Every structure is written in C-alpha cells, then in structure tokens.
Length: 223
Ligand code: C5P
Image 1 (cartoon, rainbow, N blue to C red):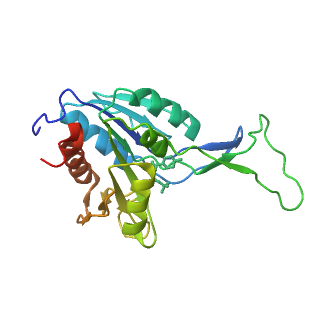
Image 2: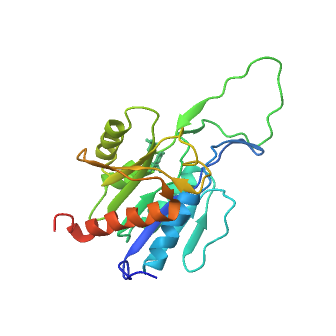
C-alpha cells in the first residue's frame, strides 16, 4: 500500500456516537455509524502510523493492526482521547459527541408518570476545544455538520477550537454523512480558505484528510 508517509507518527482518531444514559436502560444518542472515523484510522495504519481508535457504540469490528478503545459516554470519550493524545502527532475528531448529558443520571429505571416530564441536561466538555487549548505541535482535525453558512461557521469553529482544519459536511445530501459509504465534504482551514472535494468514498476522504494533515506535521505547512 502507498508510501509509508506516517511511519513513526502517532495518530488518534475518535469515531461514532456517544451515549448519554438517563437511567440504566435509556440514553440520548445520534445515528453516527463510525464509518468515517474507522476509514481514517485504517488509512493511517496502512501508511505506517501507530493508531489509537477511540469509538462509541457502532456495528463495526475492531480493525486489525491498531488499538481500538470502546467507550460509551462523552466523558469516557474525553478520558480515552486525552490519555492517548499526550504523545500524538495528529488527532482526528470524527466522533459525533452528544452536546449534553443528563444533569443527574438515575441508577434505577425511571418509572412512567402521568403527563409531561422535564429532562435536565448539562453540557458535555468540548474535547476538540480542550485539545486545542493545549495544542503543542499536534495537528488537530475536526468535523462539522452544518445546515447553512457552512464555510463561515466551520472556519469560525476551527478558530474557536484551535483546530488546523475542519471537514464540513451537510446532513441533507443524498448518500453522504450518517451511515452512508460516501461523503462529500469541504475542507475549511482556520484562516477561512477552503476546498470543495467531490463526493467520494469515505476511505478516499480519509486519504485526502491525512494528506493535508501530514503536510502540517512538524510545521511543514508552508514548505
Ligand atoms: O461544535 P461541533 O459539535 O459542531 O464541533 C464538531 C467537532 O468538535 C467534531 O470534530 C467533534 O468531534 C468535536 N467535538 C468534541 N467535543 C464535543 C463536541 C464536538 O470534541 N463535546
């Protein structure tokens, strides 16, 4: 397979959804399939990287030749990513992290009551932003799904979270994003420059993402 341009580099990838339990049998989540993150992890592996893949619950087996860590909640994702990230060169956050979790998680199954109920939610930590606050020389890549003003919002997000670039995708396009095998994304850099990539397989998106990230490792961006 291709050149071993990631030999000697450590790559951390997050994938899939998180599950935020309300009680032992109910949770808040989203339909992320994990396919995009698994594709990034497998492509980095094939290019010689030492890869840690931290994934929420998905219907995909552990890939060969890399370390897979299975988590459920955003707080567990945070712990696992931060632990793996200390000596990482490239971190790619494809995980669809739930923005909120239950303010209080019940240890017992909550009984049905008559009438409406109110759910108290508290914000989850933003893991990408946390990595960005302590960035060091690491390359940080995020994903974002926007329904409007995508490029501006993604550039602002990259700046706010101190990510090098964000891959922007749209929930509304046929055959892409959640669950599909293809993706159609726009690469948006923190400086506002962007590239529209054609619709292609998630593996090809992963390859191009890792090409861009590789150019940034070790501050080689401007050479
Ligand atoms: O702000 P938004 O959720 O659109 O940002 C998406 C990017 O930030 C993704 O790369 C996602 O993995 C990451 N993220 C995170 N922690 C959160 C929410 C999002 O790392 N709590």
